[in-house]
Image (cartoon, rainbow, N blue to C red; front, side, top):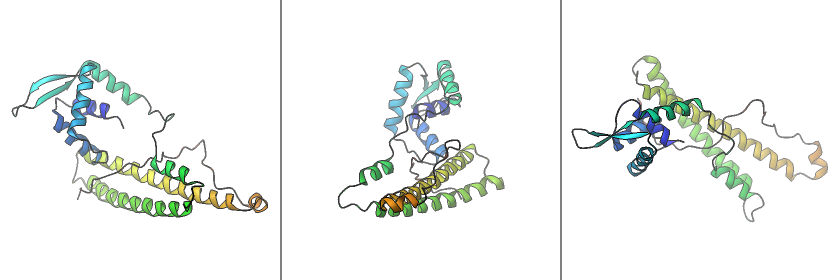
Amino acid sequence: MSIRHGLLALLERGPRYGSQLRTEFESRTGSTWPLNVGQVYTTLARLERDGLVAPDGEDAAGHTLYAITDTGRAELREWYERPVDRANPPRDELSIKLAMAVGAPGVDIRAVIQSQRHATIRAMQDYTRLKATALAAVESGRSGERDDVAWLLVLEQLIFQTEAEARWLDHCEARLVRLSLPADRRAAAPEPPQAAAETPAPHTTRPRTARTRRA
């Protein structure tokens, strides 16, 4: 998640101060990736150092405003056009947990998988309910804000992620069951379905969401 470029995108709409950027960032993403003010100002300082933003006076309340520079706009355009790099995926706690659980003494890895599956399905149901509310608001015309459309896209991505995670957990359990069979029975047992390389599934990192609003 690029906070740096997210702030540049907000500043392209006009000068902003730190806490205003935090509020707008969280509104656009539904507080799925919450920021603190210190994080925002640290990022702004780095953007200023790199010539991507510059101080732009103060508002009536004395807040220091920041504006995007031409160099910042060029950086933002390049970010939009550049595909997200999937060659170095971020660490995923669930993948690490299952990898460490394999063969760990006193750990029932199938119980770990089942517990996670229940949590994943609950999350998917929550996201689906929020999507229904957001979609109804957008399609009824009650809400024309781009923040609502952006939140809908984030919710749909979360749903795809949890769906993919649930499928992967099913695959892990089937794999472990097959490997637990004696060698002669294992040869006759069907292999778990393989992920098709030509049809990439959504990545399975698990973002958190704090947003529950939207009526």
